[in-house]
Length: 266
Length: 265
Ligand SMILES: Nc1ncnc2c1ncn2[C@@H]1O[C@H](COP(=O)(O)OP(=O)(O)OP(=O)(O)O)[C@@H](O)[C@H]1O
Ligand SMILES: [Mg+2]
Image 1: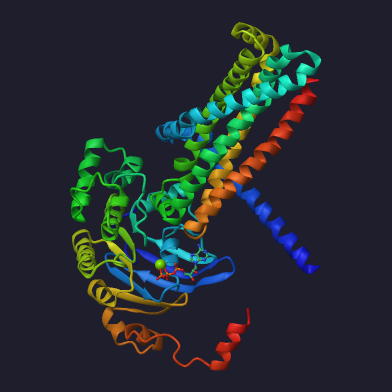
Image 2: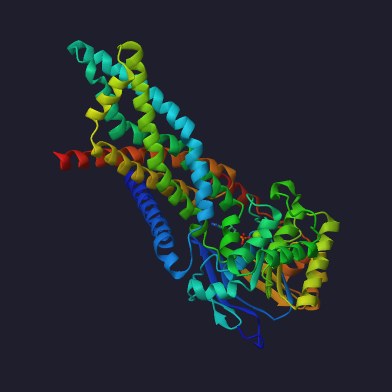
């Protein structure tokens, strides 16, 4: 991959996806500019994780394209995509550490399997990543012995193992105390400044979104309803965006007749 | 009426989807075992050996104990029938032939299906719901290569070994009964067994055990990969892996026994 690539690191164009017969993403168009942090906001079940899974090619779309550095990843062979995949790190919503391995082995796994590095080098690199996320001293712990926040950070260390150019975060601070969550936010800022990574963060935390984002995208029911700088989003007049930003609950005026009918129909 | 057709259709469809899923998984496993090593992507022998210990070596006590009891039971039942003809001499042959041709492989397979097949389904199912399999794929590490192939190899090596152990324990169990109750000596039992057993009795049993090993791995891993939802999905997959593999083991047993019967006569 040439490092002087101009244009967006990731471009999603006209993406349509289904789970079974249900349409999850509906003609999504999004650019993720190189070196910027994009925050994706949206209610539960609107397809944010699904979008990330498609960028990682864990799922194949019904139609549309996903370009990474200008290359469409969908028709690529497994070997071709593996070259790109090495440059992408992903932190899963549930951290997804390998429970049968220690923290150190978890972080070292991609280095062991995908590079020809010496064991001693791998060891040092693993320690550096664990240091970066503030987990030194926990190398020999099993994932089950860590708290939720520590697991997230260990997952992040593993995502960073291969020095990726793209980092995908699925709800990095969900379920964490405010201090740990703020710690992860400042880590994300640090990564962006120090390594010029292209970062995508899915989150529900509005405060953290506005702190770390260069651009924000709001999704609703499988569609992108707004995208722009934090300022533009804050000034958006789109009713769903306003509802999301002002935390107004769903459906105040339910038709009573309609509601009763929905209960009695099986 | 339409409900009946809908039911049949849905189940037939589900059945074929199951078959094609198992076929896909087997094809991928075969690729990573036989083709990929020539492209420099070697089999993970380390985890294969780990699986051999967990699925094979650790099963030795239970397999030998159960086979010993079955050997004693066979001796008892055989003596009960054969005593009517004054032919208790043939009890040894009866035990030896039934163990090697039939019961050794079958008992081993059923024990291993319960111990290891279910463990495969539970392990992969848990990894699936905790997104570990996705994480593996996201690193570009193939989940079939890393998780399934070592299990296949372990089973293909360990099933014949366990079957031999089972054969031996069953024969010893029968002999123990005969020595205690029929007044035979150990050397009498030994030579009677040698007379009764032909090499192909043992080899057909071992061939069966390989097939059973494949069935247990295929079903266990497939059930594990197809887990949806959370912990209760894992539980369901574990149960159905045992039920389905025992059913298929007995089905395969019928087929192979028939083939051996008709080709050797
Ligand atoms: N494996 C699957 N099979 C079928 N449907 C699925 C599957 N995964 C997700 N879905 C459906 O797709 C929709 C979008 O799910 P997704 O996980 O992308 O939501 P999300 O925006 O990440 O929500 P959250 O903020 O709660 O994580 C949901 O309605 C869900 O029911
Ligand atoms: Mg999600």
